[in-house]
Amino acid sequence: MKPQQPKPTRLTTTLIAMGFLGSALAVQAADKVVNLYTARHYASDDAIYQKFTQKTGIKVNVVSAGDEPLLERIRSEGAASPADVILLADAARLWKAEQDGLLAPIQSKALNQAIPADKRSGNMWVGLTSRARVIVIDPNKVKVADIRAYEDLAKPNFKGMVCTRSASHPYMLSLIGAQLATNGPEKTESWMRGIVDNLARQSKGGDTDQIRAVASGECAIAVTNSYYYARLMRSDKPADKEVVARTKVIWPNQAGAGSHMNISGGGITKNAPNAKNAIAFLEFLASKEIQAEFADGNNEWPVVPGVVYKNPALESLGRFKADPMPVAKYAGQQRTAQQLVDKINWK
Ligand code: FE
Image (cartoon, rainbow, N blue to C red; front, side, top):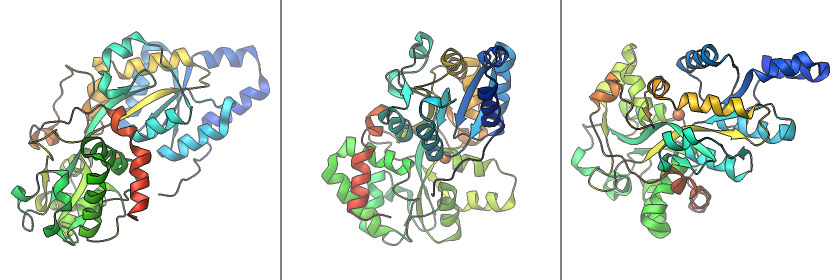
């Protein structure tokens, strides 16, 4: 994906105006705001931000864009960045934000207690929702018994059958990172070479495109985040129903470590002008009341233990074993993962 420059928003316009005014009134007004840069873009999130404002009186200014453009924007804004909170859709990207020095430690006992240690990077960033990376197959072409693990994607009998999005995408880098942490660099490299040998086409498109390509017969096996499949399951469109009818989800590695889990989550920016409000905002998203809503809006799972909710699509996929590997562990492997992707020329 080509990084796109986010469109100017009302927030930036307001802040520029405030900069020129510099009045006490403007400063006071800014005290009751939190400036959110988010790569999540669901209508259900907006309803949650409104609830936060109702509860605290703190207004949420939202700048929405893809992960990479948001990070680039914070970098280029530097010390003058109005961003307080950044929400990203992958542990690998959050790790990158931390490595690039864009985040400040989150001083919050409540968050430390609420979010399990394996779903955050110390107190630098926290997971807020979780998702699994699953395998989708055409059951007419592939036997369920033959593909039980990510490692099986490299089996020689699947030549010309496998589809994935770009291996340089954070979702793939996180999966490769988890393989590196589990199996080491040599095994991981030969696994990756095996997948490239099995590709039905050059890796391209998003996860939903891979699912559709299985349904259309272009591929027989694909890898996707769970919520993309659940979204299709909940769709009323006949074409989406057809895709679901033609495909089957496999929970990978159930006999081993469990399925690879990723997160969407957030951190507080290094130069946050409203750091206190930013903490209050993250604590709100981690509250039991909001966790279920926040996760369910995108067919994900809460990260806070003990929060239960019913999502008919996820329920019908059945229970599964999740890999307990800490998110920071595989996220930290992404540089090595990217080097391997480049080395074997997996586009
Ligand atoms: Fe996604």
